[in-house]
Length: 260
Image (cartoon, rainbow, N blue to C red; front, side, top):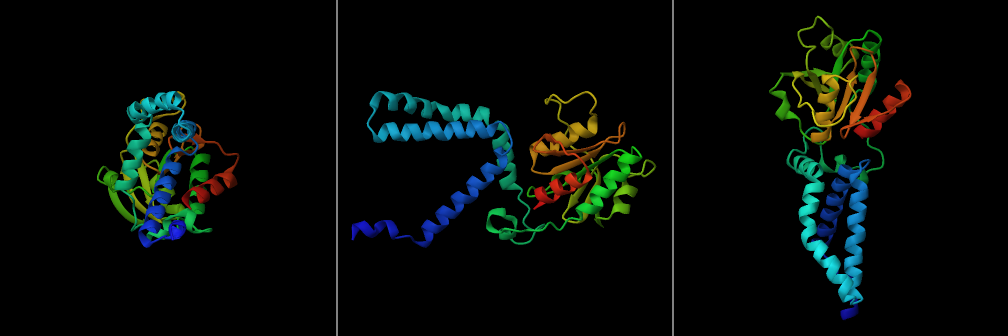
């Protein structure tokens, strides 16, 4: 009967595999598109070699890798400090109520999940504000709840439309300073003060809006759209990085894909 033990797969085993899959999914989201993905792959290779040398009883080589594995955890904490911080924030502030059921938030469980956010209105508003060189900073909430930022501005509950966004950032509007936070299809807050990134090397042509956008997208999984008051150029920022796009249609597709 021992040979059939492999197939003795109970509910606890299923939960175990399911939780590991979720953990790997979140780790992949954190390191995807960053230099950290190469480090992560390197760690997996070293771990595999460590296991193989132990299995083949290659004692000398195994001892070398064993020593590395024992002290490596400290190096990992140093190297992955931003990712670890972001992971803990993601776990601690995952917004389940804003998207409905937990399973609807997991891309690997559904093939086609349509965003509820009116991205057409947002992009059209940015395009129009760009043509008039009206500065704007829009933060789109995803998994991480941004309620901790609402208290720095004015809490709102307004449906997203193109005229609403344009009126908020109108130069004579009392609400135009700071950032707007959008959750699903609702303007959640205006005049929000975001953490500004002072460490990253950002070109001088980018001002405080861009630094704030980089800062919030590094610390959370939010997406930021910035309209430059100087040039009217629209910037798309995610994971602390500027994402290039050719035209408004490409920007629209990027936004829909990342909000899925």
